[in-house]
Amino acid sequence: MTTLKIALIAHDNLKDKMVTWAKRHRQLLAKHSLCATGTTGRRLQNEVDLKVKLFKSGPLGGDQQIGAQIAEGKISLVIFFWDPLSPHSHDVDVKALLRIAAVYDIPMACNHSTADLILKALGS
Image (cartoon, rainbow, N blue to C red; front, side, top):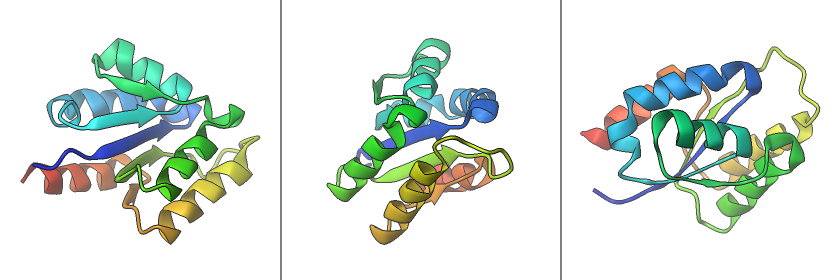
């Protein structure tokens, strides 16, 4: 299996879901190179015991840092549990991240159902 660089991001009210999802998929995630925005990454390190490269928190530029990594060809997959119903101070950064992933044809899961399907495909 090829090692992928997977970016993990979750909005505040979905961080618990991200942690629960990552615990279910810990064995497969641990086989890949992981990066994440600040708070999400720290929770994945502490609560799931995954090795994660940390970027800044999303509102402080973490989404843009991950977008730059996509543009440089350094991200293979994005798992982004985003909340489209809550306003976010960095909404323009979120939209830019979604756009750059589409421009560079990077698979992106925006909910746990899609993330499950992608990881199932990786594991088979």
